[in-house]
Image (cartoon, rainbow, N blue to C red; front, side, top):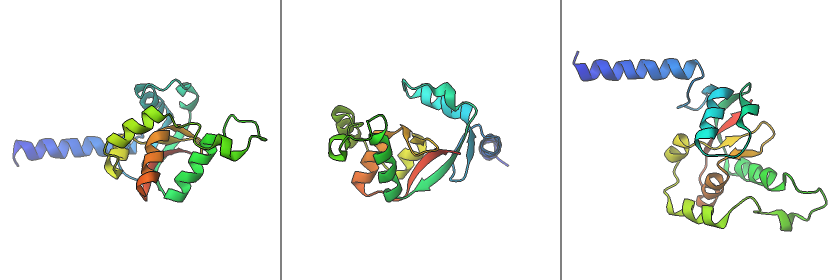
Length: 149
């Protein structure tokens, strides 16, 4: 066996073990520790309290475009009084500057696997709101997300 083959085999085994231990994700169905997701959220520069997810678990799943639209709607409506008309709320969580920046990037299934949106148990988009909005614009289906269990 050549040295490159041995190194590749070792990397594959390490990746497999890390995924099985919940220390990383890479394939649909992987279950990840909340502490790993909290660290990921912190690395994304989020201002949310990522510590509240440390004891949770997240699963990498594929969602349909219709589910993504539902999650966007939940995210838009969160924090608004219940009597606020939906037309006033729609899209409030989308920043024009960030959305234009994400439109210039190449959003693909693979890029979303690398920078995976994170969704709470109740369907609120914790991280990746603009990436999910862009995926919907592009008609992407399925869309990978880390969903809290």
